[in-house]
Length: 115
Image (cartoon, rainbow, N blue to C red):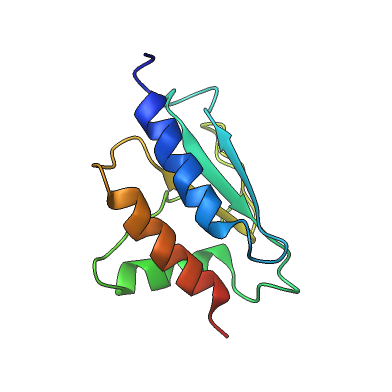
């Protein structure tokens, strides 16, 4: 089994919890530079999901437990190969312990669906 297989499974579980939110798209990717480990990229139409990636990151930090997203969330594309944009959320899944993906998925879903 490739060493990143558990990370890919975690990213797939988070993506599965977000797929019913209108306009949300997810993609698992491995940046060509920096850490060659899976990340979950979440993008959405801001006319439908009315929050920026930066605001999502703030709300995730303010919750209990505090959840830290990749610092590239909501910003310009990073030189490390991470995509960017105000409607972009980057979730680093490679260090998650079993079950943490479900906590992240639940909170991210709540933040994206909040009025």
